[in-house]
Image 1 (cartoon, one colour):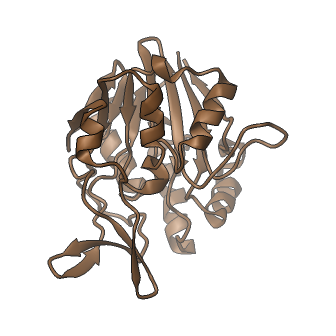
Image 2 (image 1 turned 45 degrees about the horizontal axis):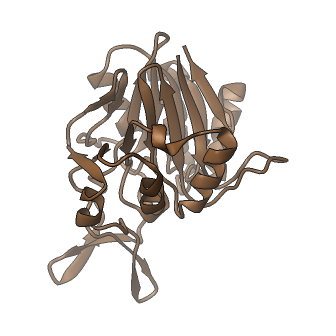
Length: 277
């Protein structure tokens, strides 16, 4: 059995003492160990919610990072204070590239706040562009290399290019794949590589049907035509898996998916617990 808990997200379950913030973090419990996927923006929210879930960070066996943006990595330094020294941290090889958001005439750094040297003093860095098995049955997708359909882009996201700037290619964007007896679960960070591109690569790399998709799909600015493409592809190619969109998925995407698939689509705030046999 694999249990997935949403520890950080933009919203928290109503009438609970759980906290939310703009960001994302997941806790994955398997028969073979525990994993944190992303750390949220501040670290404070993750630590607060972990206590309420009864989670001990000292028992975490590995960390994984979906991409470098601060709302997924900002809590890393505080999380590492509570984890065992030397645990593996899995991420894309492009993790340490500087990333920026253009706000008017200013360029704001939105990438990883921890230096490579600081991280290497706490963790064993395992950076790869290829799929990696973190725990038995828990894999990274590696870099999403084929991007035939739209990506989860923001026009303000930039990287340096010599003396100038160019759009962030989001090479570091990766997801997790959980292999369960019933099929594959795809756990997203932000889905900057594009939801349909991610699913296509998972389908090509792993055996089994995709039975569930959870996380940030970055459909927040998707047009009606793109959302319709998502609906049609999910239905025709993937047999309408269970969908738990959150973080950067957007209201219109939520309404479109719900209208198409009904209760196969469920909210996924902090406090959500998903269990897969």
